Length: 430
Image (cartoon, rainbow, N blue to C red; front, side):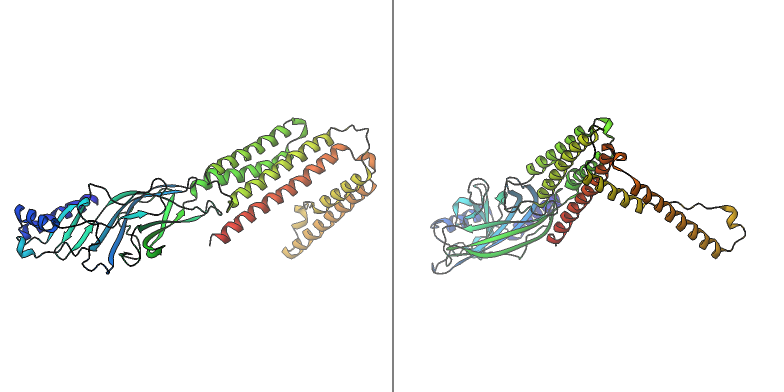
């Protein structure tokens, strides 16, 4: 594409030269006559009370960098800047039909445009090797190319589903509102030659003119939406898996001796992911990313699981001669009854019973047998628990009860934290 544009530009310039037919001497004479009394420090209008209108159009080739930590946004861009210079007009008939000419950047007046939010040093747009093209009616055309590095305030509240807006603002520093007016050529940035960024989608662009103190400035804004796939695969999903693995500690038998080390390993893994996420985000407290709160909640849950696992090991290892307190005995009976009521006895199907009965009779018979067996089984178990005395309940049974209760409580807490995280991110991302 760039090669085709270069060839087209070359043919266009060649065609103009052939049509104009201006000789070398004609061009030298034209340049000498125009610059002989030219003063580049004076605004290019005969009536100095008039305003100079400067039109700016921005072409973006690519996003060179967007560093969220240092909040630096840089793009490779070209500017098409034009204005009218009343001191650079001529009659083409007097100069061999020459309708345009070029001169050096430092020989003529140019609008000194300064980036108002640079990430490094403050620099004026343009370079000494730039050329300005003039047409016979005084229209000046200047196309500087630059790697623009600007600061960009990052809002990572709903990271990694965040959308950022970065703005490049250029100000005609030194000129008041009534001297130089800067306006965009179009209401958006030209992205015809734009190359996509692997981490960011360019959703929208805009261009506008606004006052900046006592002068005018033109602002180009870029709306960027993060591609979340990388962060989801490498950060969010591992955190979710760690949360699930955290619960499995209550399924480990106490005799394995690995419960405490397992809990601490998962806890340290969550801390490592907190470090990774914090390194990927700017050091700011306004706002704090929601994913950071999610990691803190996961760390608290993991720490609580570790504490419960350690205390439960002490319960499991208690001396069997020490009696179980009555209040703990009551809790165990309540838990055991609750578990018993939820159990279902599988119906026993007898093939002979169904050979000579209709379909409706079969269904009713199966239902009756199943209900009867379930009811009898539940009654039997409840009677066993009611006759159970304190001597039959050991510390190991209490430990098993703690495992079951803790598994479901912490599982519910983990599920709720993840659901709240998704709900907040989804609602604020709209």
